[in-house]
Image 1 (cartoon, rainbow, N blue to C red):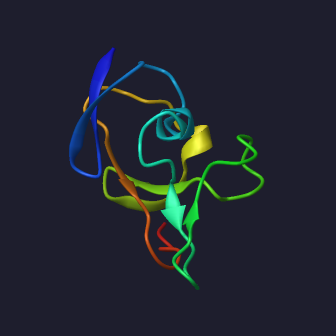
Image 2: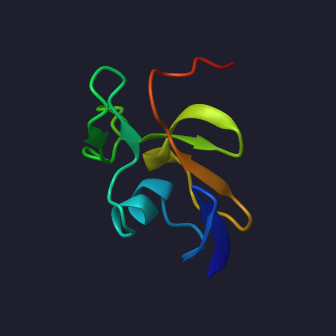
Length: 87
């Protein structure tokens, strides 16, 4: 088990589990909000096709959480609003 934060709240997670899996098992159940109407969106396909699992990890936005493994000290934030295009 490792310590991470989700939206500033300390969470105990399984090292190596996918961030999308972590978000799927904690309340409230969502990864991001729809940039048009604000509806909550959650991980869906778990293989990088749907882009419903976008989050901010360690300050970098629009990360597909289904591709990222949990590691000690990770800062995860649910993403709100439009995509943040970053290099």
